[in-house]
Length: 259
Image (cartoon, rainbow, N blue to C red; front, side):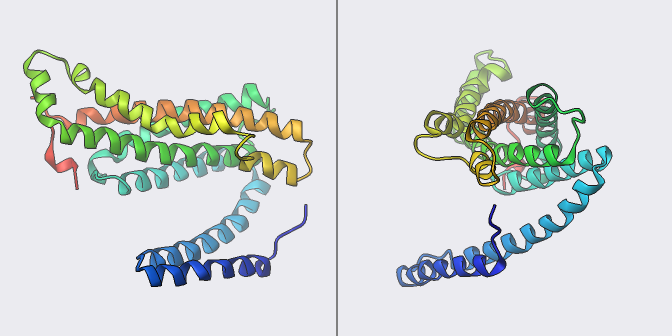
């Protein structure tokens, strides 16, 4: 596969300049965030490229698992920061809800789908784990925001259901259904149009790397199913694990969980 140089990346960044000019003319206030994001992306990915090579060379099971857990911690910070919720209350339940399905699906994927001899091999565990986490992150943001904003906006309706004798799960069930649906719909839409509307990144990367297209397609089908299952159980557990911390013993919604 032909390598892309930093000069090639720099030439591509030139194409961003017209968008910056248009944003200034139209008074769209995203230039600062865009520039910072581009700089962070270049720095972060450059560093990742360097230290991932060391991790791949060492291929230590303990180091590989630790790296995945660190990635989950960073993803949890990002999820809560991107919603209207407070970190100190919900970090542990959301981190736990991410840890359980991601590790189970990742180990299952490596053991039974691609059948690795060493299921914690860095080259597979970190790359596939990263793809799962990236999709889980966006799904959790959508799902948690949908669920807790719905509960907050319809607080009186929830309390009314409690007054009629509903259990906590019965009262929050409509908002749970809505949150799960909102979280997984983008993945369902992607699966329905994959190959027709777009060629996804994993498949494209393997083909560019010289893999036979059919081999790349099998990997892509497998990873899409894994992403859906992981995303589904992640948002479900995130909501269920966080409920005891957002309602008090009298089933009143704690106001201090919201920013």
